[in-house]
View 1 (cartoon, rainbow, N blue to C red):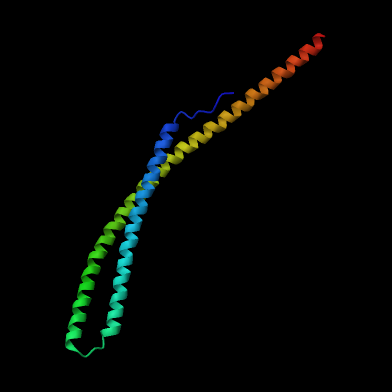
View 2: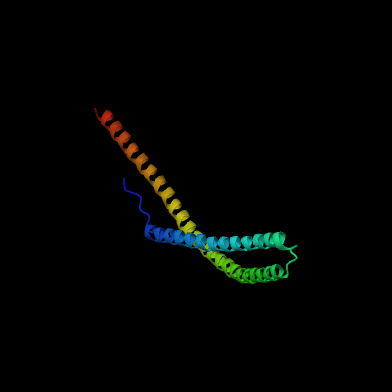
Length: 145
């Protein structure tokens, strides 16, 4: 019996490699979004904590320092929000690349499965023909005696 050979196997392997690479890049982009979101969460917690701990202070110096600190947190938050938008856009682009790679890979995998199924059917037909030939040959040998 002949061995099944998918003529586009190398292309399938390249597409699978590209898919794995794209998924890794998407993972990095999503990690960056998560990192930025974590920093924003930390800023929000620091802001609430600072107001809670020092918001009722009567000392003008403490109030001034708190105001400056909150202003700095707001500035940092604005920068991080801009970074978050950029990171989400990059993540969306990477997600689209992964989707395209999946589509390309799936189409080749479906073609491979179809060809494999046809190959199996052909092998079964060949085996049946061989069995029929053997049975016919044995029948002819018995009749000729």
